[in-house]
Image 1 (cartoon, one colour):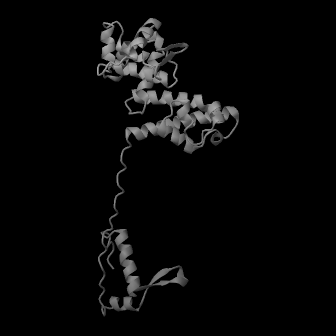
Image 2 (image 1 turned 120 degrees about the vertical axis):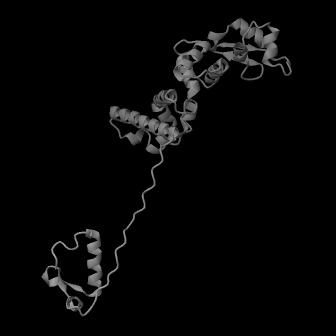
Image 3 (image 1 turned 180 degrees about the horizontal axis):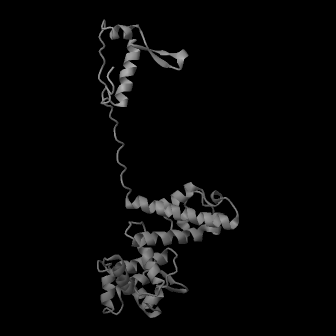
Length: 275
């Protein structure tokens, strides 16, 4: 009956005490009087000093903190970035054709593109949901976007499958030689790249169908000369033996270019030789 008594007790604790007293029969809820609390028989006995009231002290409830969300890996961020870029491209094409985006490719197909990063038409056709018709309609446009985003992500420091050769290809299209490509990439990426690696990129890209003119780095005479000795048994010397046989006249890159795709046959553009 003292004014202000109990103000040191929190709202949550008071609610707990009241619930205990209702359960014990100290108070009862008058449902016919707007749910007012009325002193019950036990409450009257307590007020008269005939009974004592013992209540349990409320325990502080603790809630487990949600585990901190782990930061996404660079690979996951790169994948999401490519997916969003492909979604944006799909929306642009759909709007231009006045059709629903999923008619072009559904999200599952875009996800697989983001996972596998198909850089060639052959690889693009392996993606679920890509038919020959859709390949002809949209394939090259989507491949170009995958290449563009992948190279940009690689240059930004992400680990992107197959992006290093594509970065070489972008510089090759600017007319740079392998040595110039090495220098340019060293400036952009802050790391030295072996010229042999860049040369390997160009040969690999050519074999995959990219527009790479390997004859920029050699000539018909060199190909003919090298082709004449490629069929010889050079033992463990391999390309080194050919290089030495010509007294260093032809580079290892030229020798690799002249290596036939199939036994005894070599073609670059319309230029073919047979041993």
